[in-house]
Length: 432
Image 1 (spheres, rainbow, N blue to C red):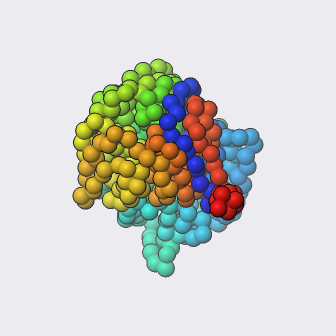
Image 2 (image 1 turned 45 degrees about the vertical axis):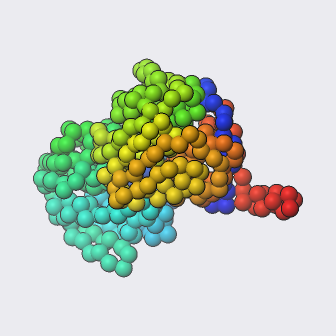
Image 3 (image 1 turned 90 degrees about the vertical axis):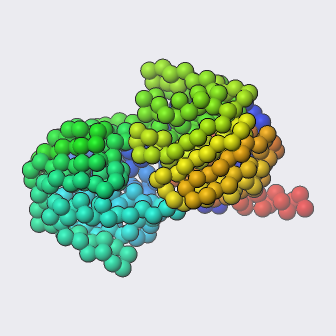
């Protein structure tokens, strides 16, 4: 169990070889929720076997669906009737994406009771847009005592303009709209590739969706959806993490089963700081160079620079030859990881939404704590290049989003080991 485990990383190894990128966490979770919209069985392939997927499976099972793993990476979902309308606190509190069952439950059952979402503590995650959008369909809401309760006799299509291109709100409204009466228009919609993946999955089920991937999505409601089989898109954030790991270790790594078009800004930024990046149809090769140049980065909604890669790029800029500035425009608490990286010898100061990174000649191994999913992964990347040994605790955060993380890194030459806290404690007693 990762709750009582840590990663022990010995730095200094140059990564070289091939890594197969897994299915996208941020897509798989939403496709699993969308499976609630039909009475028939849906089969998802290329599903990452990570803790967040296991949590979403548990949520669906508590709602009355049958979830089965026919083989690794293949999940079969059968929403039996009747479904239960309540997603419990003990599960939803573990993962903010659980709020995404709100739209499907309203569309299928006309009611839903969902606990307020949890997950990484990286900033406020307002659900106002989810609620206001679903209210436009005719739903009524009561919010209090840690739960969101929603009711609707019938969802009716609406024209909705989002205040902000929220991914979660776009997904919830998109799913609800598939079974609403009439044509729905969502303006200022999120444009992330995961939105396109969700729309493609829903269209495979019989939905009528146009415009996914643009700021205006149109949905013509249908009476029912059917089941089918669908392959989850590659994980662009996992891919970006390995790109940085290869570049920071001056390595030579080829990523397979990846969509380069989803990583254009990250690839361009790696090139600007000195790495060689070669792009193929479904693969990316990155070759690290001796000199890392500074760069400025500002996170923005897609197609802007992804906030989920901000910490990984901060790690490589920490050893650049010069000063860099990162501006975080998405989550206000995403700089929690800075204190841990500074323990390893970086020189980073934060001022509001800005981080000023003065490059140092090298990092040193140290005991650190993973503050969240992406920050934890970035600390592993830092450990790969640090002098000595780095121990990263609280790696359950990392396990929420990366499948076989240490195995994939070891396969290309990294020295990384998962150690239980019990084993570590026993070893320390022997040393003493």
